[in-house]
Image 1 (tube, rainbow, N blue to C red):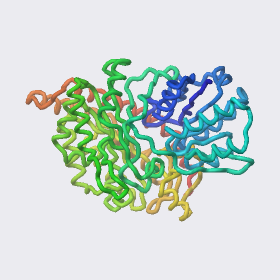
Image 2: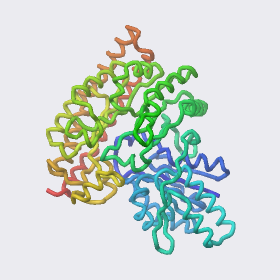
Image 3: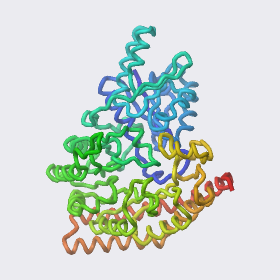
Image 4: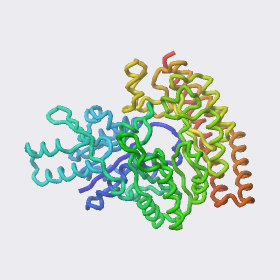
Length: 502
């Protein structure tokens, strides 16, 4: 049996256009399926060398499509093409968008939707489907077995059925994803997912509703085995920990901490040293990790050269929405602490909260420049399916449209409270991004980073000066690429501006 996975491309330019890596879901599932004897291949359209081979689609038995909201329209177009090439294949859907918009997915040609996580439900369904292919007949017993599989949505006799949350799988049982399944993919770095869920329930995020309230993580020992696996395949390749927060706490349903995220990260770093796996690492953390200077020093020792931090907002009035209790002065100090440890920052900002004004955006720009943050990602607040924010804005009648292609963080799709929609769009895409990514600021960051590393090297405080110098050069390249992306984004942004309510 041939199973084909497809990850549709994004509709336009985005921050990771030049450094794209496949999302983890399809490689993880199909690595396990291949181990069970299935023939598997993945096409990731965002990667130029991984375009869909329609001769393979014509032979596929199962086609599994994973989508976020902005790629959903492309997914539906792909489904139409699939039916032209192959009218016998069963089309399966997974990922955040299909999880929450499952009726839309079923109405657009998907036969079965795997909602939330599919590590257990996919293989339950696969066993059920295999039993059908032997008998070529569906009886009442088969239908009852299907209803017993949790985490699914599908149609029977025109009626949509949705079962409960799927069974939680211990992350230690996950296979190490084999990215060789992705046709034509030659990774420059490896994305490693070591946990699911989040210990914060931010209003604008769907992570809590997507993965359930309980955060769960892979043990440090299993993560080490993952790193060793990729070292054998690709040599000393950089590793990016794609968890929402690699230092998140593991809590019970009462909110009590069972395992400290800081302790887990410390244990991982110590194991990296013990197994001599020092290299180039990066990952997503919270800014408050700067309050653990010994842990930052340990991270630098194993080779962490960059962290991705959700700064979200500098406006204290937005604290409740973003779950960030830091004040402005703390943010400045903690940013400096990361820099002093030789760790560069990619800051992710969300603008457009109910308490935001044009002055908020202006102050955010000034802060990015003053703090000399390496790279910045300005996202417009998104009422994504599954998020509490979307439910609230729908009740308030503030959603402008459901053109999913525009749900990418670069388009205003709702009515802000303290400014016009077109003002928010213009302030971020046409003003904030160009100012932060100007050439002068780029060179200042490059020079200051190298001077800081040189000082740390001379005082023997830099455990890996070569990694830090290389990181500064990568930041330079990323900023130059970002500058070009910003320039290219101006024309479509101006066109979209004309469609927004005045």
